[in-house]
Amino acid sequence: MKLHPSYRPAPGLAAVLFAVGALLASANAAKPPHIVIVYADDLGQGDLSCYNPKAAYQTPRIDRMAAEGIRFTDAHSSSTICSPSRYSLFSGQQIFRSTGGGGGAFEGCGGPSYLKPGTVTLGDMLRKQGYRTGVFGKWHVGLTWLDKDGQRVRGGPRFIDYAKSTPLVDGPNARGFDESFVTPNCPCTDPLYLYIENGMVPVRADHQHVRETLPNPDGKWRWDNDEGWVAPGYEFVKADLLFYDKMRAFITTHRKTHPDQPFFAVLSTQIAHAPVLPAPEFSGATKAGPRGDFVHQLDVLVGRLIDLLKENGIDDKTLILFHADNGAETRHVVWMREDHNHDAVGGWRGMKRDGWEGGHRVPFIARWPSKIPRQQVTAQMMNTTDIFATLASAVGTALPDEVAVDSFDLLPVMLGKQAENKPIRPHLLTQSFQGQFQIRQGNWKYLDHKGSGGNKYEGDLAPYALPEQEPDALGQLYDLTKDPGETTNLYFKEEARRKELQALLKKLKEDGRSAPKGRLPVAP
Image (cartoon, rainbow, N blue to C red; front, side, top):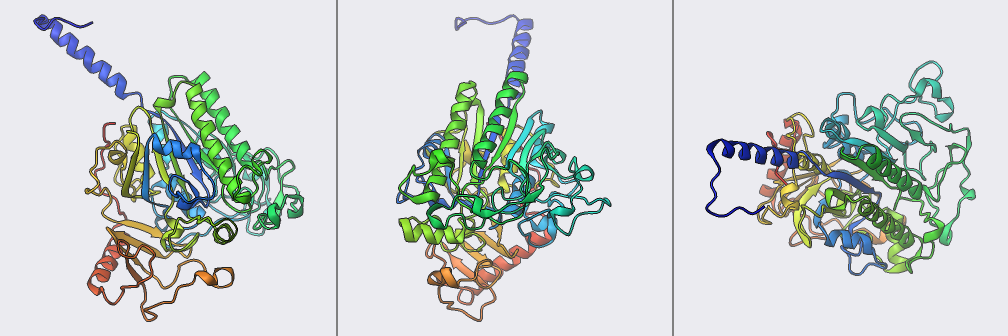
């Protein structure tokens, strides 16, 4: 109802109207978004056509997601290997906060979890804000398996006592998630091959997997499928279709049974980790071989997710984040370059495991139709750890200083409220496969180690080895504006800058945090 300009409410009525307005505003603020994270595996910036116009295939649904929201061009995984990056996603912290140094990728019955008891996780934080939470796919932050004597298993999966081990004391349901359907490690690479549903193991691993039972696309893309203990009925080729179906059931059921409650879901995919096993319906879908088909499958699943949200009438009320745990796998980079003229790392030096940009510069896209303006591209620095503070801000909660200590709030950037010349992050920390540090400040990048920090550039990688111009240097310093390929080591020539970054790195480690204190939410 539109009132006449001369209308003035009675004094008592004015107070009532103000109170009603405040209540309505409060009700609006009390409706935070639904949240979905699509977390890809071993996916470089060059693997999406919205980042790489020369890609050997197209990713139209992810490209459209980016066009309908914001795409970060200076986005990074916290680590160049999967398990530490997943720790960062769920904790908002660098892996050395848990281990004191680096952290490898778990295999077999490896554990216990990097997410130690008392660590406030992303699931914990959102559950406290009234969310129902679920995670589906690859977990891979370590688990505690027990033997018949109740001791942690160290001798291999055959010694697991499932009755004593479950419900898992450090599985997803003990780390902030209401529902979960996950694999312990990489779903198609690292045994133990079984499913964990809500902390329990519905079907135990009871026999040895033989890799020859799987397809071998182009005679080589089955590479890195390790043999080991597997449960009957375990799915390799259709792994990501299963994970998507579990997430879809979670969202669909939630909307029917808890229509007024927000949900948080993580779809943690196998794509595009080795082995490359696209589901039959996607085989041959591109002209870029099995890996092109594999990434196409991921693109389709993102499209199906957005369609699902639209069907449920919640598309404009849902914040979707798309991110990856590290850069593309070594052999994948080599084979895609050789066979399809496709550069999975998007022109950056390095690959998965390396401290150079190709090891950790990855996609990050956010879409929230009712809040995030369309057609945004930003060069603001971003780290996996930042997802924690950003989601806290999106749901209107302040983070205690001791929680997510490496997490910066990116919501102002997403909402278009932060000028490009005003950086959210004054610095950026990453860690390579060997746990070594890299630090960014503006265009300057310092690597606190010699070489890649990950791969040995010999064999298949020998053609990509670059001569070291400063063999006596203990680290590497690059100006990424003038030298994005990290070819000219300025370790000695820019001594003052190098010492400044070394001192900053030391301070951030000793301070116990890299994020600011007193983080308050930004109104969407």
